[in-house]
Image (cartoon, rainbow, N blue to C red):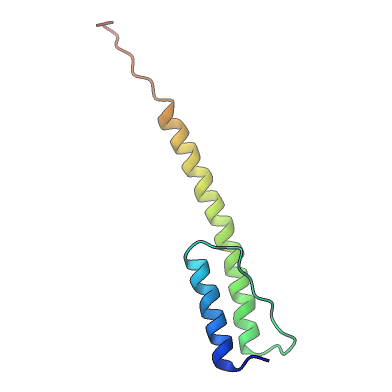
Length: 79
C-alpha cells in the first residue's frame, strides 16, 4: 500500500497529465473509501468533463476552419 506522500505524488501526476491534455490517464479508488479515494473519484469526474468539453472545442474549431476554407471572393467588375 502506498503511503500518503506517494498517493499525493500519484494524484499530482494525474492532474499534471490532465492539464497537458492527456485524458487517457485514470486512477482507480481503493476499497478504503478515504480522503484520497474521494479526490480520485473527483479527478476522474473532472477528466470526463474535460474530455467532453475538449471534443466539443475541437469539433467547433474544425467547423470554423472549414468555413474559412470555403470563403470565395468574387470580382463583380470582372477585372
